[in-house]
Length: 230
Image (cartoon, rainbow, N blue to C red):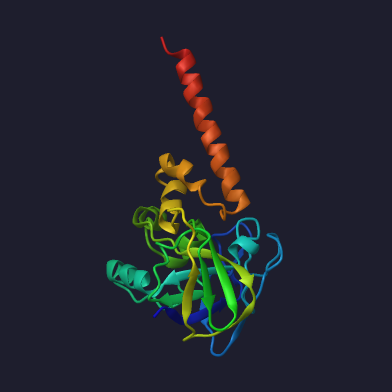
């Protein structure tokens, strides 16, 4: 059975590694129920988790990044590799899960958490310098990218109340093969995979636009190279 080990929220703390001088990455487990809801558009500080905040509203937040989930099994892999304890919430995740293949989740997959909350897998997390500074690991962005176990951002399809121990049930799996792991690899180190992502209708609009722009740029460069070839 898949379930929540913890629900984690964060209040802003000061940092020198963000353009906005504060970060909400310091998330800690919460006792008792936590409300899950559809947040406002990107640009506001609220997430889809009551009591949680984002600070860099240019790059984080909004309905497509309402909730961030990371698997305890993947945290344990990192803990073994880094030789340090990694408690739930340390990656800035709102949901620390157990028994759930988050990396293998497909874009558009839907989870029922607890009795009523319905979440939809939307996109992988892309590492940033704030995350690297928070972990304090040398070369962290390259290391995180190489391992390609990024965790998943989720939309809130139906609000509800959740808490540690709640069961997580996968109730819808799209017919395509675009997983969180594949999307992450395509958006970072393996751009040749980008065309495959377009099969996922549930990709965020801004991600789809980024893919089209990168593919167009690649086509333009190829055409320019061909025109200058002897």
